Length: 168
Image (cartoon, rainbow, N blue to C red):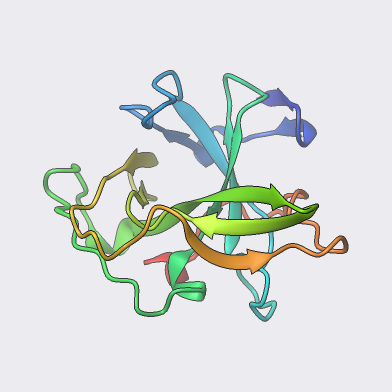
């Protein structure tokens, strides 16, 4: 399918790249179908074979896209406990975790934070994304992790459209 987006222009998305978001996410209840587009390494992470940043692009609203992060790339001590059964996940090996990223612009320098309190649980087997809110208060909603330089370009998607196993 062809999708017209504000950030990336017109993109082609195969049906097997589409993730359902059955419950939307808080603040965006209409979000129901997304694609994950690789956006390269996070600031300060050595480039490797896999992306550590992703864009979660809404397929029904081309203006809506969220930057996401594989949290362990930046926060190696990050621990979460989710109930796969409650989330309808059949295989633990199919679980990937992403954190929503916010770009805060202060003094013309974009600072990045990750929401570690409410991760996205990606079930690559069933092609579903669900946001869970953790009760563990040690994980902040705005965990700072980087500053974007003018040369950094986290807006161009790569061909990698599925979070790697490093996101487990």
